[in-house]
Image (cartoon, rainbow, N blue to C red; front, top):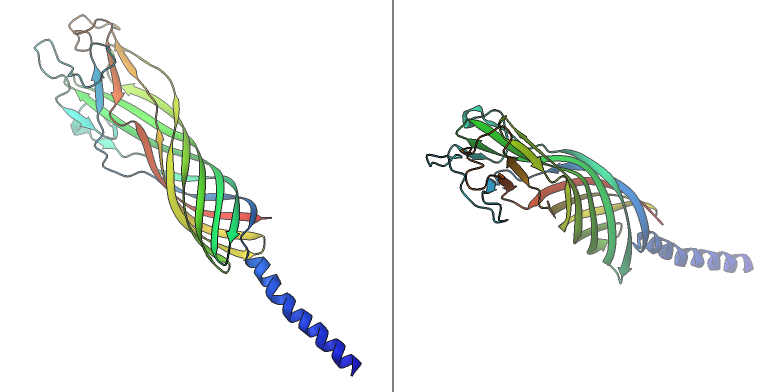
Length: 276
């Protein structure tokens, strides 16, 4: 009888302990670190152009005219990198590609299924975004941005169903951008003000599943928009004469700027996290 009673007590204790252990394994509260790998891409068809400041007063939107006078950029623009000095040469598409990095965060599970948390991450990417102008010379002028490093600091909130979490996320983003300029114009001189980087925002969502109490995998989408900075290029005199279109209004030259201030991109990532 004593043996049966002892066995019943042990069995009861085991039954009581089993749900508690399962609940602990399903609880999302805790710190985590991990990595992500995926693909970054941009939205096509942004209809971007190059803007001009002919009198160097800091206000862009002037028309660059020839001595005739006539619009020196009547051939137009393309929102990609020009293949040659005329629109007939065509333009290349912007470059997208694989990206990856690391992340760290903390989650807190409140009640049965509501989870809130914060996460920071870093992604190395090589996305490239160009815009070109064509002059009547003929000549091409191409301004290019390359997003190299991307950081985000986000809050996230979602609903957990056992070991699976569905969440939305949003917060701040910071991007480091490498700028460059190329042209087929060999008469004027061209100088720029270097590389830039800026703050912006990000938002998205995802799903994460715990394979064990301390490891999870997930699929995540993020939209990122960062300030690309005030990158400027000045077309100076070089070997050109005073009737050069860039020198007619101000002999010191004409400034170029892109019509869009932000670098916008999408990222889809597979994630893996170790949980503590």
